[in-house]
Length: 126
Image (cartoon, rainbow, N blue to C red; front, side, top):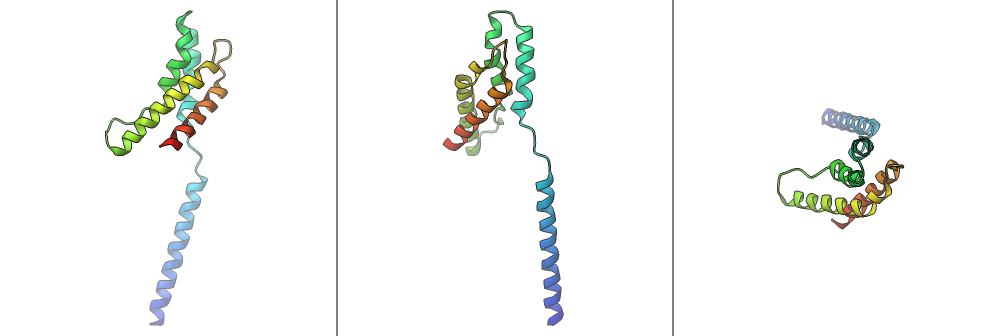
C-alpha cells in the first residue's frame, strides 16, 4: 500500500513538473507580429509611389481594407461574430484612421495604433 502511494506521488510530481515546463516554454515563445503592422507600411508606400493624383488619395483606404485580415469563409455561429468584428474594424478604421495618412507623411505608426484601438473597440462589442 505504501509503495502505491509513493508511485502516485512521484507520478503527480512528474506531471506537475512537465506541465510547468510546458507553460514556461509557451511563455518564452516570441510574440507573433501583427499582420496589419507588417502589411500596411509597404502597401501604403507602394500605393503612393505607383498612383497619380487624384487616385493616390484612396491609398490609405485601399491598404486598410487589404491589410485587415478578413474572417475565414466558413459560415457558422462563431464566424458570424468574426464577420461582424471584421466589418466593425473596417468601418472604424476607414472612418478614424485613413485620414491620418498622406503622401507627405504616411504616419504608419499612428495608423497602426488607431487600427489597434478599433480592434479593441470592436472586440468589446462582441
